[in-house]
Length: 266
Image 1 (cartoon, helix red, strand yellow):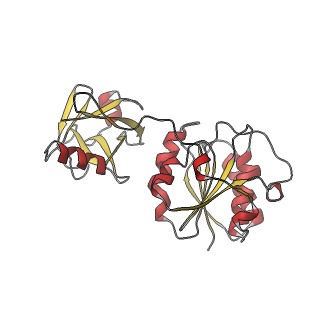
Image 2: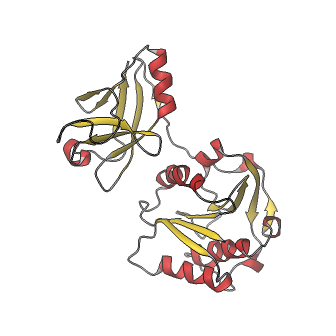
Image 3: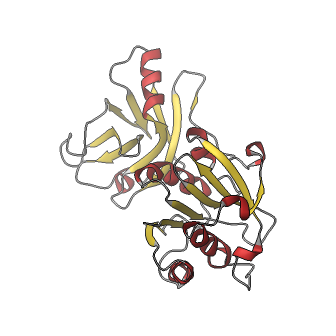
């Protein structure tokens, strides 16, 4: 079975996603197309990068993961076909694959420039339709990556220019709200392994989390661990620290927004 996943910032109000699927199925009618989400915030490469990290490994070997969060579409940026031991990723060279590359076994990277596998007419504003979709379908049909373009040095691939969690002068571990899900839970950029190292360093059994002026002691096991309307901290399914409020929206409770700081207090 040929599986192609789609992650975009296109939304679903317009025809963009459906058109991409039409192109894919015109080339490979047997392809199974999975929508990861099309509600990445417009042009939010960082959000897309963390999303990729959270879902790619749950698919069967051979899945082609297509990522179209592409603020510089039609410009000088390259299009990448990146192969790991199990998957192939198609994405713009804008840093969106940075977190994946930090943890995956990358076998090769191709700069996709062989227009024989593009649509005949190329728009300057919709490479998702004209390049990404046909390339993905040709891959699932059996075209080898080396036929799609030239080999690219991994060191030349653009990396995200984003501040990662850091240790402040007072010893606190400082991260931020990376995204907010539809339930109002605040998903941070502080991973569980980073929290464990912080606790070992400061000999803490229960970390204290601070958001605004509110302090939350300890990590809950799930969203029901505290009574209704009470803030709690937990490790979410992505493996990152989350702030939630029992039976309520943490976004509304804290008037929170993306980028707001979150601290682990030493």
